[in-house]
Amino acid sequence: MTTELLANQALTQLYRQHHSWLLAWLAKRVQCRLQAEDHAHDTFMRVIASNQIHDIQEPRAFLTTIAKGLLVNHWRKTAIEQAYLNRIAAYPEALMPSPEENAIILATLQEIDEMLDQLPAKVRKAFLMSQLEGLTYIEIGRQLNVTDRMVKKYMARAMLHLLTSEF
Image 1: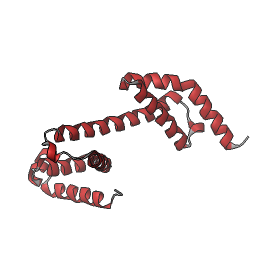
Image 2: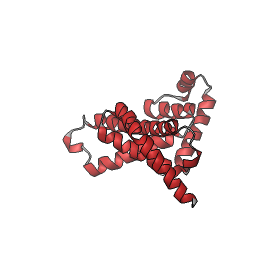
Image 3: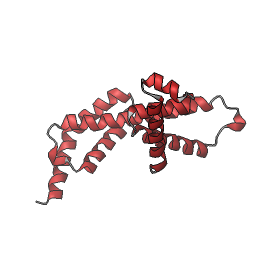
């Protein structure tokens, strides 16, 4: 038998043995059957993309790890979308973005979030404190318990990362 055929059989077996369990596990966390089905599908698509089907020792732990990552991404995306919608709800109707503009803005916000998530925690926090809260480097340094010189390094690192990241 070819390696591809063996991988397909292993995937089929994994799916048959664990799909129902994974779907129930996800349904408890998202409280929407259709959303749970989407996440279960995406989980198995990630399994396929990983090319690790023969290396799986603990199938439920493996599936759970992938599904948790998908859920975290989903919740982050939802939180960003909700924050944006709450913010623009106060706009006068004449200033409301069109549906197309909303889609572009939300996609951009999610891309920025993904780029910021790649930064170390203190670098990300310093950048956000500066850009969103308008804090000075000295104020940021006090809150992060680092020198303002270190805050400058954090800011330079964040800026460089954002400028060199694929957008």
